[in-house]
Length: 417
Ligand SMILES: *Cc1c(COP(=O)(O)O)cnc(C)c1O
Image (cartoon, rainbow, N blue to C red):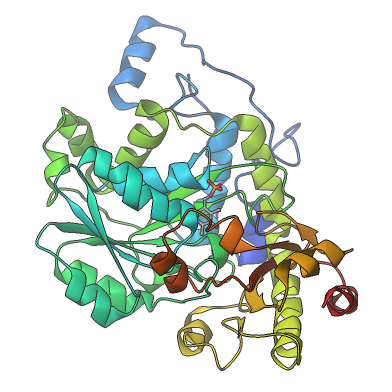
C-alpha cells in the first residue's frame, strides 16, 4: 500500500515543530495524530506486495511500521535534529536496540558509570549473554579514552545522568570514539527529546531515550526511541557483512544504521511501540517544552533553597555552580538544567511519610513532582560501588520536579523536614 508521508518539517523552531511536525495537511485531515489500530495493510496486487517485501519502505505489517508510530518518529527526528528515528516499546528497548545495532558477540562497550539502573543491568547482565562486554568508567574524556580496547564499538553516556546529574562533554567523547572507529550513543532521556540538549549537534551518532519520562509527560504511557544523525554507513563494521542482512543494508547505504535499528528492534525482536502509545507520546511532545522550561526554573529555585537549608545535606543539581559538571551543563544545555536533582535528608523514611504534595513514585518527567529513595528502590540491586558512582547514599532523595507552584513544593518539603 502507498501511504501519505507526514508533512515535511522545514526549519521550524522547537516550539513549532513540537506541535506541527508529523501532522498531514488537507481537507478532512485530523488536527492531531490519527490512531491507526491495525496489524496489517492491504496491497492491490501480488507485484505491489512483492515490491514492498523487497525494500520494506512502506506499510505491510505493523510490527515493522505503523502510520501513527511513523508520524511520531518523524516528530522526534525533527525535535532531535536527526535523520531517522525508530520508536520502540520502552526506554530499555531503545537501549538494547541501540547497542545491538552496532555490537555483536566479541565486541566491547565503554560506558560512563553514572547510569540509570536499568542500563547498568543491561550492560552487566543481558549483553554478556550475547558475548558483548562493557567497561564502566567515570564519564570524563580521559577515563573513557583509557578504557578503550581494540574491539570497542560503542561509547555510551547519559545526557544529564540519572540521578547524579553528570553531564558528559559530548564533542570530546565523540572525538575519542570516532578516532577508534567506534560510535557514540547518548541516552538523552533527561535531555528532553532535544529541548534541553541535541546530542547529534555535538557529534553523537545515536540518541537513545525513554519516551516514558518527559515525552509522555503525564505518567500515562511507556515508550522509547532511537534517532541517528545523517550519513551513517556501516561498511566499516562486520555487522554489515554478516548475519544474512548485508544485502538489505547495502540497499540502504547511508541509512544502513537507521534501517538496522528498525529491523532489529521492531521487526526482529518485536519491541514495537503500540499506536495508542505513539499517540499519547506525540501529544505529550506538544507541551514538553513548556513543561520542561517551567520545571527547570522551579528545580533551580528549589536547588538553591535546599543547598542553603540547615537540615539538608548534599544537594546535587547541574544548575548549581558547585556541581562538578556545571561547566559542561552550562555549555551544552540550551533551555535550562533539567528537572531532576538529589538531596540528602536526615531521615528519608520519615521525610517521605510526611509529604502531602510530593508523591513517592519511581518515575521522571511527570507533571507532578515525584520523589523516590534510590538506595532502597531504583538502585537497590545495584552493587554498592556502582551506587556510590551514581551518587546514591542511604540519605539520598531523588526528585523529579513537576509543574506545581514553587511555593507549594517548598512548603511541603519544609514541613516534611
Ligand atoms: C527510565 C529511563 C530509561 C528506561 O526507560 P523505560 O521507558 O523505563 O524503559 C533509560 N534511561 C534513562 C536515563 C531513564 O531515566
